[in-house]
Image (cartoon, rainbow, N blue to C red; front, side, top):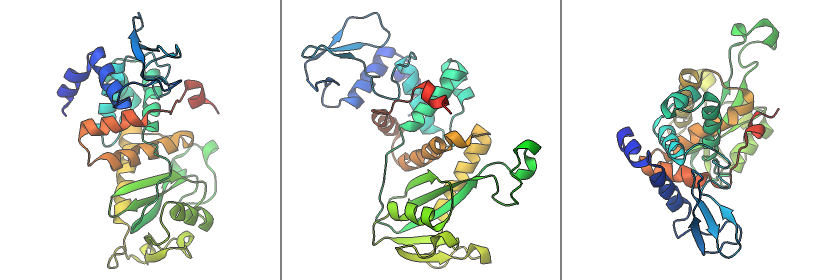
Length: 300
């Protein structure tokens, strides 16, 4: 789907509403309170059509209990935002959303974080073989203001670790921000996302040594990157894309919101084999049950 096709199809509010309704309730609208099928559209002056349950009298909209909950933005802009996030492999900044959708930057920033929630699929377990690797996100200590330097040495000091696993047969990825790269953390993450018989490939980070899986290592510290089937090229490629997105699109990502960005890049990677409209469908369906109020987003 091209941008022009997306605009032509979804710039009309009624078309966007119908598309979202069909994605959320493919077998027909059901009441969110009593799950009854006797639901009708009520006449209303509100921009988003109101749905009324004739059984329990509950009223709701297609936005209710989704990432769009209580949003005053038109449905057409939400659907077009789904399109932009699906087709922009390095992400979409809030400033671009602000300009492209003609909304405020504050609304665009909140919208972007809510859209990232649609890619959170919960715990995923892979059969393997898998590659596991970690990356460190954050600015260089030498480039920081004096009052922000941790003075904890060089290398990864002051950076936040993110660990990831990619399943080779399916090319699916799961990533998570962690507090440490010790054995308990790294092995717990990999074991939690792999079946017991899975083959695991990692570099020679000491945190993976002794993992309760069939385990092969490539010694990056010795300049070894491939040893027969043992390598971490899949995860390395993902981290490269993630870094380019953070540097070129978002420029700065706070530690507080880092997990949503890692979820975004993993989710977009996992849905890349799908057609654009199917990626958007997955996002619309993944939005259900994931409210993110602004107060919660900015809370300390």
